[in-house]
Image 1: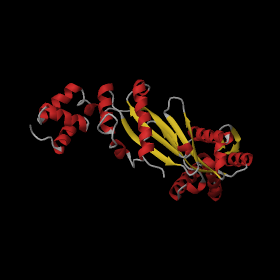
Image 2 (image 1 turned 180 degrees about the horizontal axis):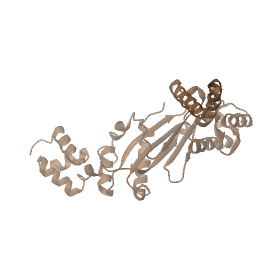
Image 3 (image 1 turned 60 degrees about the vertical axis):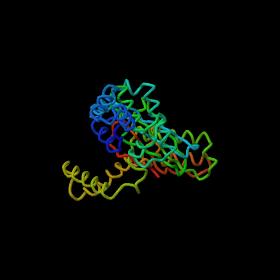
Image 4 (image 1 turned 120 degrees about the horizontal axis):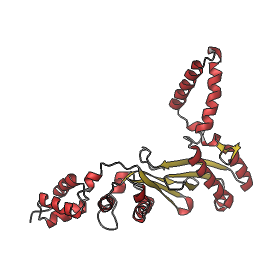
Length: 297
C-alpha cells in the first residue's frame, strides 16, 4: 500500500473540501489511490461539503458565555443557511461548544479556533465539515471575541440570539460586583448597547478622522440648506453635540428614561452603591455583520 503522506491528504482535501481525518481515512481505505478515495468520500457524503461551502449563510446565532464570575466574556457568531437549522439542538450544541473552547483556549483568530482538537477526533474544522455533510447546509464561523474584563461583564441576548451584547463596567470596590443593583446596571447597559447601537464609549474614543468626516458632512448639509456662511460653524458645532449623543454610549439618553444620560445613570447608581463606576468597553454582535474576528484584551 502506498504511504499516506500529508501532501496526499492535503491534495484530497483541496479536491473535496472534506476534513483532514476523513481524507486520511478514505485514503487508507482506498490504499492510497486518490481517485478511489474521492469516491469513498462521496459515498460517505463528505465530499459534498466543498460545494455547500459556496452557499450563502445568512442565518445563525450569536453564542454567549460569561465565565470566571463575570471576569471573562465570549461572543461567537456561527452561521448557517436557514433559521430551521439554527434552531436545532445539534446546531445550538455546536455554538455552545465553540464558546467553551474559546474561553478555555484563548485562540488568537478563527484559523486558530478551527485548528483546535475536536472531542470526536480531528480538528474543529473537521467536525464542522462533518456537520455540513450531515445537515446538508453550509456553516461557518466568521468571528468571535474573547474579552478579559477590567471590571465585570454583563450581557443581553435579544430573543432569537441573533443580536447579543456585552458591557464591561468597572466598580471602585470589588464587593460592588455582588450587589443586585450592580447586576441590574450591567444588564441595562448591555440592553442599551443592543437598542441604541453606540459606536464609542465616550468622546475621547472618537477618532480625528471620524470627526473630520462628520464635520464635513454637517457643513455641506448646512450650506445646502441655505444657512449663511457666517453661522455655518455654529450650526456644525450644535449638530456635532447631537452626533456625540447618538454615537457615544455615555452621552446617549437611557432607553428606560430619556431624561437621563448614561453618564448620569452611572453617577446615580454609583451614589446608591457608595462607589464609583465606569464603562471600560462594550461588544455588540449581530448575525450577518461583516466585522473581522478580534480578541479583546
